[in-house]
Image (cartoon, rainbow over all chains, first blue to last red):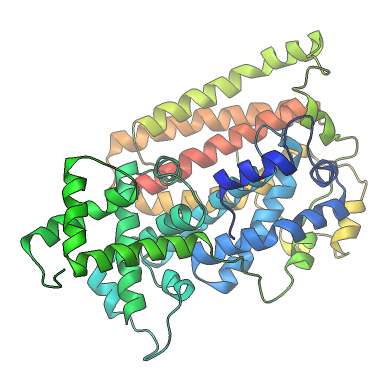
Length: 191
Length: 249
């Protein structure tokens, strides 16, 4: 399952209670400059980070770059991690910020209003005729605005209030985008 | 149960999103009654719920190639004597803040507070501008400037490095990208808005400059390192929000 911050926190509460006094050894080691410890963290958390990147960005090459950026940024910021929240949650927030910045940069470079495509425009976008569309492929075809809300809410488990803070929109706006995304996905999957 | 659309179907579709969020009330009771009799709307509700459920259980995806070698090449070595563990535990009861450290905290709290105040004002005003970065932000080190050895070799290096410079480099690319976006948006913004945001960014940049100078004088200070990091985060957050908000300008 993809990283879901709220669930992650509760799951870790029994198996790995992150706190200032009980930070996992690899986090502490990597923060102190231990490359082996950092590589172990990378191996453990990379699939979750990459999954977030590829679903939010919808592009493999860019997702690989974004994943690299996340871990380079993680290395730089690890000494500042205090254990106030679960490490996985902290890392996830870092990853989301990196991805959102990339989406914004890319969106502006290519089309400032790419996230405002209409349902009709999306429906007209071609998909391989007769090809079986799975949910992953359908997510990748969502307009950027709807996709980022859908991934953050339905895949990653963020609340509308948290998404609002991240994206600079209202909770109501997040709800509307989520519903729009689900309706588009249904339409895409039904083809 | 009927599959023909009725006048209630439109209203039902409007309510579905909130109903799926768990909201309740008389209108949602009516919605549930409608779903019990309308196969079209009940199928829509079922499909939307299935999409949400499936999305929540999607498996992790693994990239087709190993990204670690490229990541390792980009990592900069920790500064000698930079003991991160001290940061990790400094809030614990066993590590009380010394009078000397408290003095440092008070001494360097001013630029942080100024930057924070600016962030609140700037984001609260929903304004858009271009960064007037008076303190030049070093560009990220080009690959050719990095040591050609393996990532592990880089990490093992014990050569002293400049904490302030490392932090600047780690933020430079993202700040540059965001300021480029804002520069492109500048033409559609009113002059007063641009002026206010520019002044706010100048305050943040001044705080960055002040913190950098302090860190250069005391490069082993995790407190100063964290402060500089926080101010950079503030600048990034302000730029990021401004870019997002500018999309709707």
